[in-house]
Amino acid sequence: MNLSQKMVALKTIMVKEYLRFIRIWIQTVLPPAISVALYFIIFGELIGSQLDDIDGYRYMDYIVPGLILMSVISNAYANVVSSFFSAKFHHSVEEMLVSPLPNYIILLGVVSGGLARGVVVGIVVTLVAMFFTDIQIHSYSVTIAVFILTSILFSLAGFINAAYAKSFDDITIIPTFVLTPLTYLGGIFYSIKMLPEFWQDVSLVNPILYMINAFRYGLLGITDIDLTIAFVIILSFILVLFFFSLRLLRIGVGLKP
Image (tube, rainbow, N blue to C red; front, side):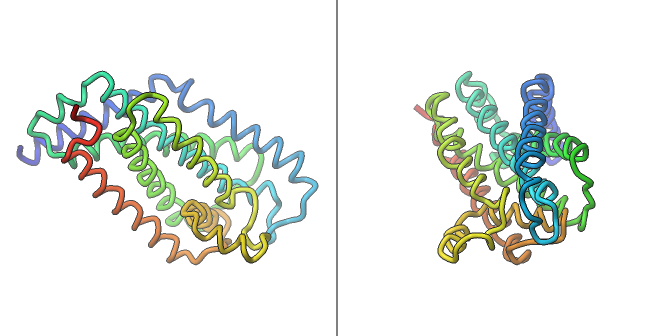
């Protein structure tokens, strides 16, 4: 295939993935906005009003970056894992695999759907947050970079989950027992400086901690983690997961009987 044909194929997959979640926006975009509004009401207004400021910010303001990124993570992941597993289940992915389409084009197209949903949901959640707090972005470049890189990372993670999944039950195991605990323990609702030294060291093993702190720096200008280390970890995970996903496509994990 020449370059123009590859671009047409990539665009086709991207449009298909985008339309897949935007057609049912009431199920894919609206629920995260409602959930975040409830978080702000319960944790921000009711509980947060009883707590002291953290690093000079009201508790309500402090949790904004984490809540936004939590929505981005869960929706980017969910979009790809459900999309690719559905393609496996209905055997429609086989049509792409038998075509001369390079594996990286297939992967980029599928991941673009997770990226798009992560960005759309993130924007919607940010708009909701503006009703509860006055967001003053400290660094647009850091905010946008973390926004996009995190969506890509968890889109790739969702693809890997879908590749190994053998039933619809399998695509819920990782989000429930791995992703959700890591997200909640990633410093959304607290600074790791508030933890005992032992638990601070344990928290540093959690990769989501670095993403949330980098995003918090972008919005508020404060972080518990060195920004350079955070970006190195995020980019390293993306590279590892990208090439691992390509390998899964190449050898046909979960695609061959």
